[in-house]
Length: 188
Image 1 (cartoon, one colour):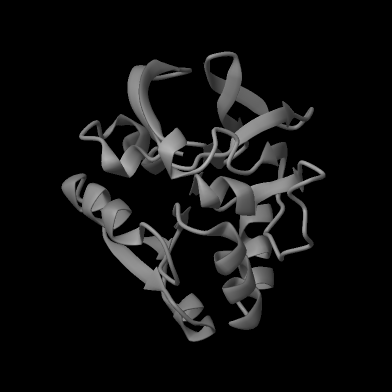
Image 2 (cartoon, rainbow, N blue to C red):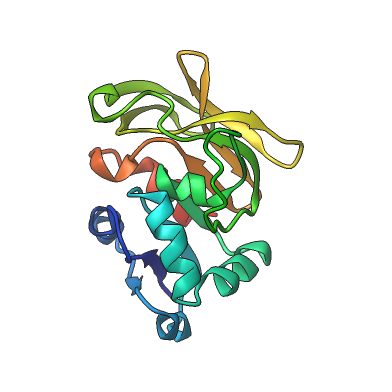
């Protein structure tokens, strides 16, 4: 089998490179017909969540992917991908843009400011230990609902959560040389 990477916009190539290092086969999802490919996992990359959500909806991929995630398909959402997975956005961020909305978390977009607010940290991620974290125009998790659990915090803000087979990260593990987060995802 393989891991599908949403490839309509954003940092999909970097995830594919990280997975290739781990020996994983990747397929790209660019249009609805790509959903016929065989894959057992999904990565929703960083990029621009509004653009990705609109394209998922316009290209007819939103509902089929939502169903597969709800049925238990392991899914990793990083940065914009985390926003796509969130059931709720902070009130000032929610403009009704289509989202997959399968994860019981509330997310605030651009929580650390614009591009100049980007930063790097090393913090504990539950189940792995201390990992490098690169934040670029990053969101943060405001609240974690009963169905989800927080996995990591930075400066008192939740930056990673899990709900069943879904992992949501405010940062970009594909940009750091540490493969442990992608391996955790592959092990789901």
